Image (cartoon, rainbow, N blue to C red; front, top):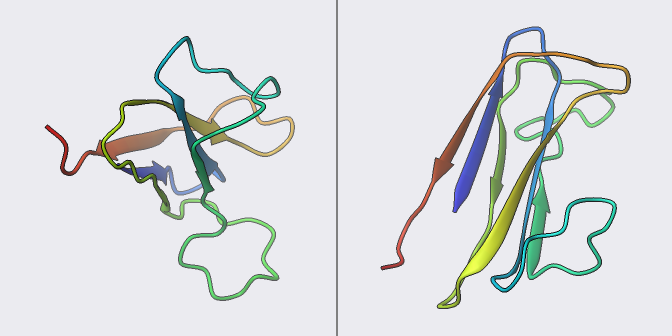
Length: 97
């Protein structure tokens, strides 16, 4: 599973995703205690890690699964005190049956 987040040009967002076992409802932060896998986009494509923000930049994560079904939680986060911002979220599934 590939997840891509494209914020509007002036919007600074981050992307995270994690998978948990398929039984029961997935837990949300801060109540998540374990995950099968988890990923966060941290300044995807940036080469200057001294930058605090990257508004409008594409964010990507990738979760792998073998043969078992999983619950997946996808989170989009903005900076403290942000209340709105436009973005497009794309989920791409590969493989499976």
